[in-house]
Image 1 (cartoon, rainbow, N blue to C red):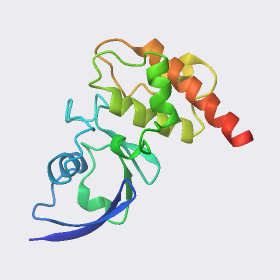
Image 2 (cartoon, rainbow, N blue to C red):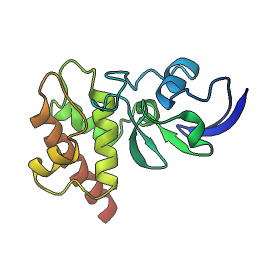
Image 3 (cartoon, one colour):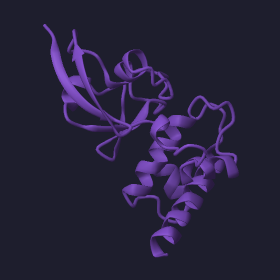
Image 4 (cartoon, one colour):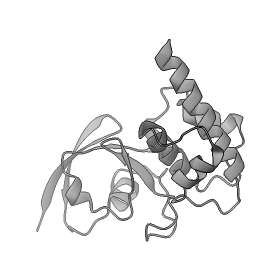
Length: 162
């Protein structure tokens, strides 16, 4: 049984045919669309390495069936930068040492963008840590991650005010 669906991935409409309705969004992104920035960590929704934005909201791509997202807009880490211009959250992660080995970084960045967009980051690093608690970092770069989120949020607020 073939199932047709349409997704807008990083701004590009994609018409897809799935042979198996059990394909997760993560597997679709990595194996069919060759967007390997989202990582398969635990494959159980516990680590956050696969976090992407669907219609602007952060989700664990390993838990979402692709077929259930027909018509959705998906943003992955590959869709953030514009040429050489990094997204403000990407730039903040670099400036504040928000990563070490880098495995969790794509999911951390996508979750940070979602947290800021939801208006849940606040001004306290502890609140950021709580809001990003679904994203694990084996290296323990949490202090830099929280600083990066707060800095990026401040930059976005300054740009909105201008």
